[in-house]
Length: 213
Length: 213
Image 1 (cartoon, each protein chain N blue to C red):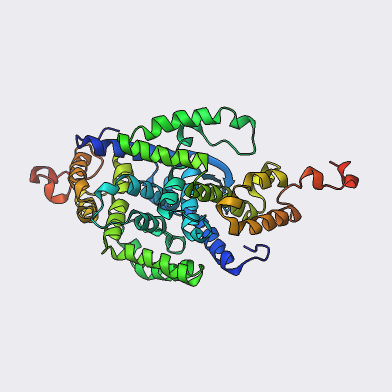
Image 2 (image 1 turned 135 degrees about the vertical axis):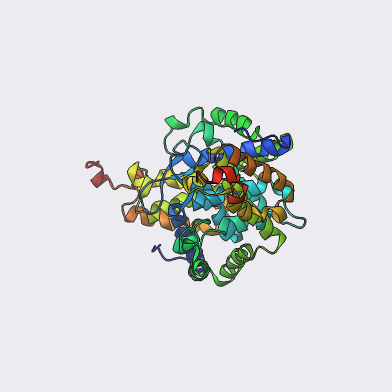
């Protein structure tokens, strides 16, 4: 976008902010609650940020809410170039890390250098998931789709025949990132199987029923 | 939504977070940059939060970025009940304050009491626009549509025959909330008129041309 001539630093900031608009067109597997359409990664990121604000009491000791908010706000911007790979689709996730690293260089690189370093650093910290802020942010990113899928009577779980054992493994970071919420997650996933929202794990199916599968 | 029995405090937090999902279905006049559809208030709020993070150096002295982020994240949630009134449509704005106050009571009231008070307080502070955090947040809320409308060759301005004097008056809070950005805003709106994205103010039209209007 060409603006009338102005401060070059502000121009780099605005080019980045305009580029972000494209995240509104990146669709996730998860559906919004009225079921009418898939959620996009921009509104997902907003929802996560509000989850962070409301569930901050469950964050690990030492979490800085302001940093965690910025982390969830930027955690998906690489999808503008790399797309959203469905977490239960192994093929779609091949080469994901390289694609996302290249996207991070290009997109955060639109910013003035020190801001590029700062926001790209937050994204890398999220990806590594090793600090209190990142553990909390990652836990929220796992937790929000559970809320939508359970409330949407299965949502993207049912649409993709996802199994309980797959979701439980995927949710494991919640144990560290929001330990107080973990017992609820375990109960909710059990209930999701009981209600038919989520397929049971293979080993939980009684032998007498396996012949029907 | 009925979850399996769990902690009542967490349940109130989750009912609030689920209710927020509806903001993804509230449409604004502004269009996303590819022009294919209207922007919704959830993704708009995400975009504002990133504007806050990137443009923080332009905030008034004393601004707390973490609070300003939370403020822009919640600033539109009342629209779940009250809808989005187009700012240049006087009729649509009649009774808006009462509708939004009732919405704030209901929606924030889903939360545990002290969290309801805290987030509703942030929303009221935004509405009053009198603190540094609120001045910055309000300025961002005015600035982001300029970026989209200018880059979208007029966007909702052109679609609604909005005039330069209307936008300039609406943008006035940017003078206090992001003073360093104001000269750019003035230049951009002049350029928008020159390019035909925005209608000229009536008094700026030479008398010789008025007969053609």
